[in-house]
Image (tube, rainbow, N blue to C red; front, side):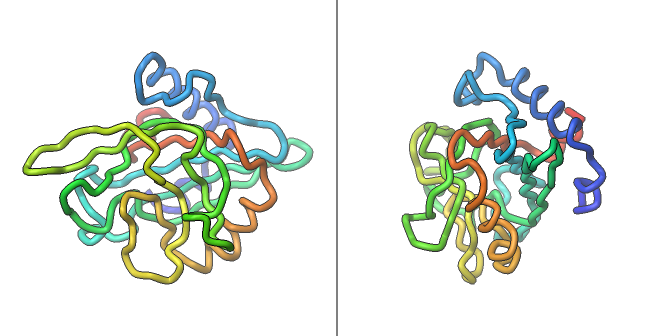
Length: 201
C-alpha cells in the first residue's frame, strides 16, 4: 500500500468498504455501537486506521508504516480525502501497553490530554478494545483508555497505544484545520488490517 493506492479509490468504494466492515462486525463486540453508520452529511468525516503489520509488531520495529485516511464530506456533494502516514502501534513492547484492536467506534474531537492546540479524534463516546501483554500472555480489555488519534508534538516514537501521525507538518497544515471545521461528535472510526481493507474492496 502507498499513498497513490488510497488516492485512486473513489468515494463510493470507501463507503462500500465501510458498510461491508460494519456488516461483518454486526452482532460482535467489535462494533462498538450498533447505530454506527457511514456519514455523508456535509461537514462530517469518516475515518480509517489501517494497520500494515501484525498487532504484535511495535513502532520501534516498523516505524510509522500504517495509514490514516479521512474522508471529508464537502459542499455540493463533493468530498476530499486526507492520507497520513502514522503508527497504530505502541512505541515498544512492555507489560500492559495498549495495542488497538481492529474494530469500529464513534470518535469525537477534543484536545489530546486536554492540552490546548492538540486537537485530536478521541474515544470518549465508546469503550473500545485493546490487547495487552503481561507475563507471557495476551489478553483483551474494554474501556475508556484515552486512545486518541493525534500528533507527536515533535517527539520521537511516543505512542502508548494511540494512533500518532508521523508528520507534524501534516498535522498542523491539514489534520488540525480539518478537525476544527467539521462536526465534532459521532465520527465513524474503522480500525482494520491492510489485508482486511484489500479483501473488503
